[in-house]
Length: 484
Image (cartoon, rainbow, N blue to C red; front, side, top):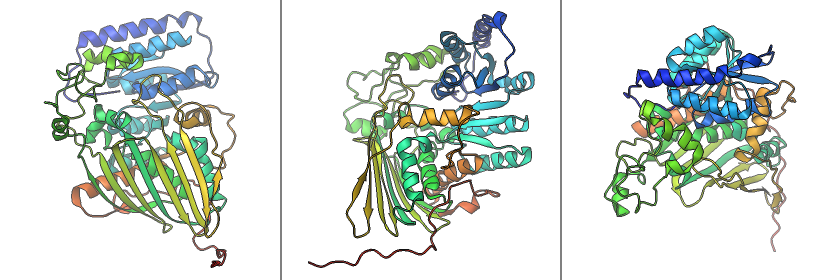
């Protein structure tokens, strides 16, 4: 559900779009039979929602049915109906966002899938919980401490939990890192060095979408780094307690456009008078999936998916450095750069018995686009203290996010999924623990002062994490140094 604030939706277009979607839904009604599957509805049907659509229309159609879809944009609701017809399933009933509560009352779904822009997650999550529904929400869980508090309070009030879709936990090679740490390969972890790099294809894409508005996305510290902070929280089985951070925007600026020899910035790529000379030009019409979702439907809400990456209204950072203190005593040093020459990350865990180094070079493309590669170059090695390093053959998978998407979706939708000793499923506690590091970092950017996580929310309980080597356990001394 992409939204441009202050843009009105023409009533005639809305009614026409919904009528078309309803007609498509009616096309299969005649053959409807009693359906005992779990019943899902989605709110927000932008590019991120396609993963859930495809799961419920493909591998997990025996486990659940997408019975309704809700969005601000009727054209995208029509697009979802067309995709359902192509998949050979009954199209979900279309609802405009203003009718979200009506949808819950009329259809009484078992669960609500929330994939709206980030700042609107809390509103739909809380309303769904209060209506008695389970909730599956895309990461980040939300964007501010106040919104996180609303969700925590709603879970406590309703007695329900939500599911935050941290698919990075499920990538086989990241799960393997967790297994190595749990097994005590390097003892207990005292510090972590983590560097994440976004290239000027994927990284630049955050600066042309709604993500470039911090009020909607929380900036990259929340929208993107929620993955990374959650990984560290889960890898360590620990909770963050303090944050110090600095951040700046120095690359995606009007000044940089002029340094590149451009006259801009301009409004968007499609109408840019300098498209022929700007190497950051993005042809929205060239990608069939993005064209169908956004370009063909921008007449309804005025949202441009190809905004200029140099425009002055961008208010998110492109260079960030964070130091996080954990309850168990571990310290994380983290950096995120959004204009690098390659994409991926390096992470090193420094423990009482040695060091675990893990790196991934990602072949990432434009977010949500069709046909980009998911093949990653992965390396993991153990460096014992005073010993010889050894490479670990990385576990691999197929599909999105290094094979993590398929494993996570099975864990969510398949009632017969096996028990998970790694406890990769995340609820509101893990979702809050992740975003609060980014929220605290954003506050550091503004004030220049460190932030305590406990100052941001109340009632944040410890998530369910696997047991790790303890900081007070006996430690085997490394071998004596041999001098030649």
